[in-house]
Image (tube, rainbow, N blue to C red):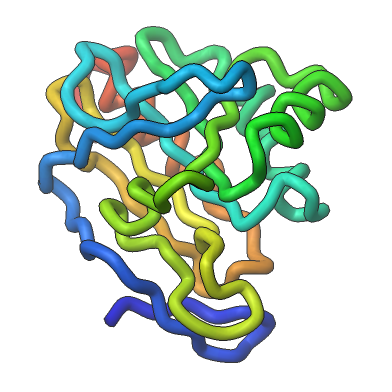
Length: 176
């Protein structure tokens, strides 16, 4: 079982453990307007899929704002923030924060994303939520980058994720 930490205490994660090069599972999530949005799979665009426990926490809000600002410059890339928050709350967060360069999606219905990507917190205070993770899916639908933060309270490595997204999208021709 994969693990992460919550304020230094180990917690288990359940679901499939994805590795670099694996096919990114295609799953359906719920947008703020209650429409269904698919993430994963090969779409011809790179995808940055960011899992957060809840947009209603300082670290998650900061992370979403930073990805909103920084990922907008990467061509041929879609950016999604996935949480268990209700779609209405996610929509309100985006309106309040001026989030326009990414989509917030909810996995509240059946936790399909959390299980498929192996980021469902299995025990501890946050059981049933997603841990903090970033996946970059290349244009062909393969996992090109993965980070599950060492501790859920830590922000991810933005530079590594965004560099991986630039390569995965074809915005950067070769990696040195």
